[in-house]
Image (tube, rainbow, N blue to C red; front, side, top):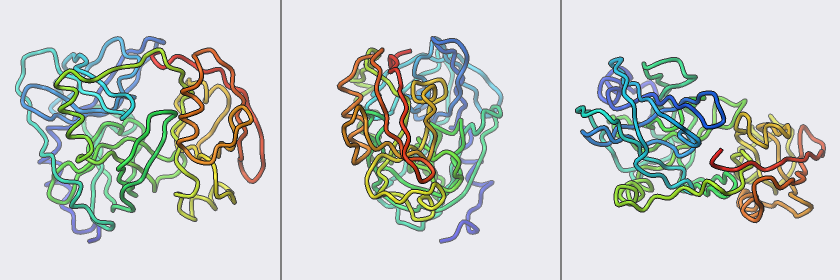
Length: 310
């Protein structure tokens, strides 16, 4: 173990051709960027559903500088997975999908992706597996079988691969705790493989009309002591906010990474799953009241829920 044993250049040589940057034009105007993993020789690319959410068009950039338009194959937003495919007839190099079941806490891993939207060349950060089988809830998008890592997963890395020392994809980077460079989460590749088959079989769906707050949360009780100290948290219940989507209802309501949601419309929020339950009962345009614990004190804010599809 120990990240010093990794041959980063060898890993990048092996995996780099299968990692792409994804640029999207959005319904709400503006652009978004993320990453993807090529999974076959026909240009099919695995990414997060939130990376392509609300996109009117998509462009894929390969590490050789080539750029191609892409279209949606299918998506399962409840699991934050999507497949897209380049529209041009090109040959692509597929990533080697490994077995996340073989991972152990302390194993070396590398996160690769379009970090910080810096261009087509992928960024590489190394770390170790910090925990396994974590859960996150992004207001009804229940993410489980997550790999927690201390490899820096920065904006734009969503959808990129988490790779083991053998250069095999063991996870897909999906979430970061903002304002902390030492906690990231990846969907395990073992949990994604059957979902990939479902989407290719035409079973993917997109519920564009559901209500959307724009936060990713996890349980307060799952947070390391260092994170709790950093954000001044002395609670043992609640939904810890790891990410706030820019321009979302949560962002407009002033929510921040490190906040703890303790109530929604007066009802106690004991866990991250309670946030999803509360939002699923609402409609786009509904106003909700959020009770928040921040920096050692209680506050509240109102948010007007948006439409998930933009």
